[in-house]
Image (cartoon, rainbow, N blue to C red; front, side):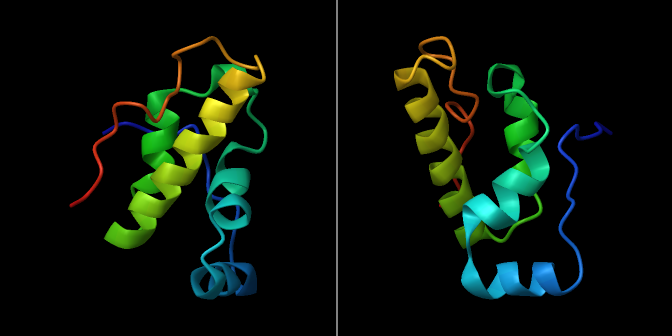
Amino acid sequence: MTTCRAAWRTRGSALARCRTTGGQAECAVRPALGAFKIALVTRADVKCIVAPRGRLQRNRTLAFVSRLFSTFEKWERREQHSNPARFIERDV
């Protein structure tokens, strides 16, 4: 069993708010990867972010993370073609 470096820090009423609003940035990505440097995020970290979510939210969060890291590549915060969400399969 692999352990996730990305730890969920959202709990209680904040978690209930996240479930109703569906905000991927505030509810999934920032709590899990907030302490990480952009260049050090791996594919395993992204898988840990999307794994506990439902099928629809998993796909939306994965699309958001992919777009986020593509933007980081454009801004030269990451190496080109190093998007950690690139080869993660979407649920159909």
